[in-house]
Image (cartoon, rainbow, N blue to C red; front, side):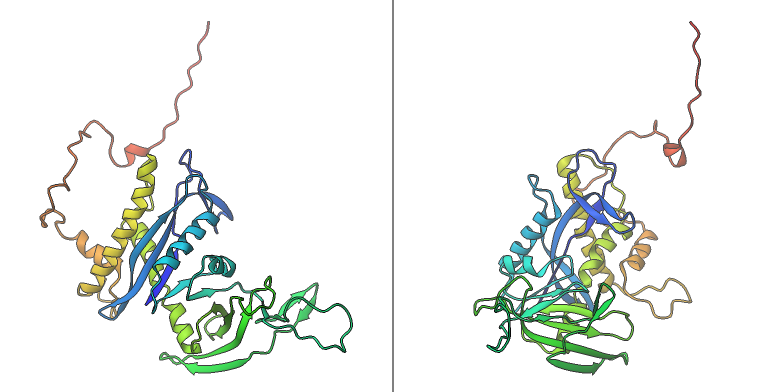
Length: 340
């Protein structure tokens, strides 16, 4: 069973008193956001891979930083991981943090310039100088330093296979490595590095795992992490929760959790519902949450479905409030000069 995890941000740049921030790639800086740690199980519904939310972790009010949330999320994942389950994480989770959290089985994406070391010291008495304390460095990719090219370390094994779509995938593997800051030791946390090259992508995919797996299995496991990224997309974009107008401290945390739950329900119902094409041009429709939401928009929902008594429309009087464009139109105030 796969257990992917992620940290979906809910941007609140104008919210006062929000201490947590998250890096925004477009703004190129950290912006105020409500961050949640999400752990899910990946399964299959009618041939479609779907992530089922299992645990959500909030930020610590005393330490609202992203590093503290990652630490709590990894510790939670280490506790719930079963014997036949493996943790899947992207490059936002460092290998050192995974080792410190004592995760039993993991598959983590590494940085493009990531390196490792051998778990032994290659030293002969004929060599001059001080005996090294660390193992020989392993570089999965070619690097350059001050205009000088540093060659990649030869792989321990190379595996090539073909996908069902016809692409030939090549994986270079290095076995029994330790982190660059770890000295060789029998008790060291060992892992393997896989550099998976796909002709559809420019750079190879670097992943590290402490489980002895075949290269095609490693590739299939990591690509099976993407269903968890569907939940924030379905919740924020399809449901429309990317725009929030709540300001209470508890509500700001509870609404993103409900959004992720709604995105999961919408994704699951879309997989169970008959696929509806967008138009005559949509000859190969997919069971996506967007198509299912569009189908619900044309129905008298929720009037056609009996809801529980606790779910009811709030009888608030809003007739005196402006609607539509008039509600958020900004008008310049006329300056009045007062003579005294």
